Length: 337
Length: 273
Image (cartoon, rainbow over the protein chains, first blue to last red):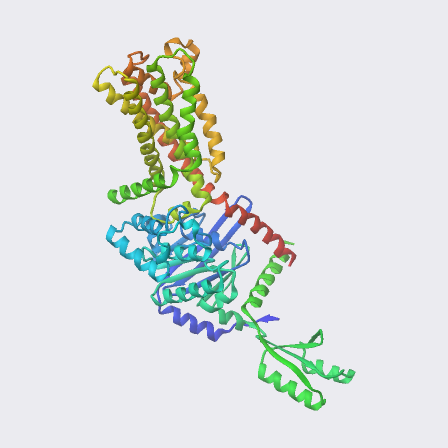
């Protein structure tokens, strides 16, 4: 399997992005924990109104990148962060109001009620009392938490806690929203609600950076994906581009009625270089699905064979992700050797 | 700008008072401990009521002040709410002052109530009206001082309150026994008298003695200056220490520690792939 750049798509994407201004630009982010480099010279840009997903296996450096970006961890070396074209490297705290952060695990005060948590946020961001009341009500209604406003946070389910986290992150109406695995461990209904809400926020013009393990989530909501492995970004493209880049894009699966003669087997392997057989199923990795189906049809007709259980499987982003991680690790393993 | 900052400090203080006064360690070390400590010291001994009064007020103010401030940061580190605070526009200074003010107010209220009850119950006589004011000034100074001491101990980057409380007790008890709280400074041998200089409680009890029966060893001005100096030193040392340990607290506690293990595992696993 090989990579092929889809240049046309990349160029059109770049042209499209060129029209928009950059919301976040980070360069040379590095974070070391003793002998471990958690984030290794990471640089990327996020355009205004874009949803960018950071994907990676556990411990790839996704959350650490977010913590560097939001000022939880100190920047090291030549690291530089620009927010809306302003260099904030030396004064991250001044620009904290630009960010709303939804963590993976609730960080609301567990002994406060939902409303007390919201009021605390409003007070910290300097809102007047009347505005705090109004905004709290607005968010509680949006996230369907109005019935729970007087419930203690520790008594809420994970899904409700996550809704509260969204409310807290959005309280001060930040232009940038950072979501750290926001749907992890939620039930399907809550996941759907969250994803719809994220897409709604994009429509409202909010720039969103999201870390996730969930390929489907990335594929559904992200405009662009950064794949991280071992502290480095190993891919930075749209979900479709990444899948396109990863040829072949489809796999043809089928069974053949009866036992093939040696000649028929030879003819089949001659026709399809990549054919494999497993558990009675034949699989062909296809670059051009229509051409290959037509070849298969001709082959079956010529050899008088009946084909059944015919399926076409598209390469999922998950497979691309696993492939990229493997390839990156093998290449680095090779270098280390 | 200053108004915004003061507003944030006040909101943090209110939050700390609401959330932490009912926590186990605060109730145990802030209320029960000084009560039983005084009881076990005073009962069955030939101690004057003035002496008991000075002891109970000194111990209550010191123990209560050092009860709330050490637990806030470990609890908030564990519950991740510290991260929520740090990603909002709150500076380290504001965060620490929010804890100190909450602890000071809590101590002032508890100690003042106990002091007033004791004065009324046992008809404690003061030298003058001014000495009543001096007594409450002393309580105020110890409330700040104890809170800062607790905060300094909380700089140890852990998310376990028990860890901090162990260190706190290792500091609190020597400071208590070194002071003139149990034995008047006049009766201390010179080497113990010298040692008592290293405990702020020495100056607090001495100030209280001046207020109640005039049996003070130093002048009240000296006591106030020394208590203020302790406050200044503890504030500076506490701020510097927290500034140094905060990144460590965030990097090495809770989930991040687990993640570090995960990262190492991932590095090994990806080599195997």
